[in-house]
Length: 88
Image (cartoon, helix red, strand yellow):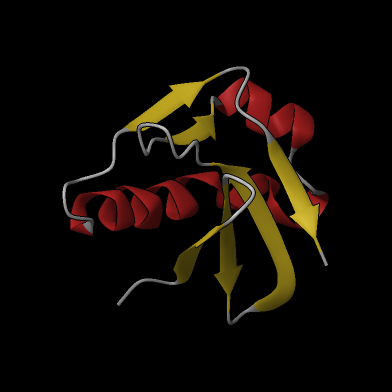
């Protein structure tokens, strides 16, 4: 069972939530060709909120599973320019 859940939002965003925290992370999810973008390790460490710095790998595992579960599967791009924002 995944720790994190992902919900697409109309602004071409993918909202990541966890029962362990009330904070949410928001990633890019362009809708033209549905594609999820996720920061590289260096970009994550530079831009992720403090509480999420050590959670990158576990979030990425759950995001990969979410992308694979979509019909058709959603491509996942790991990119240094991918955004990550915190929503409270």
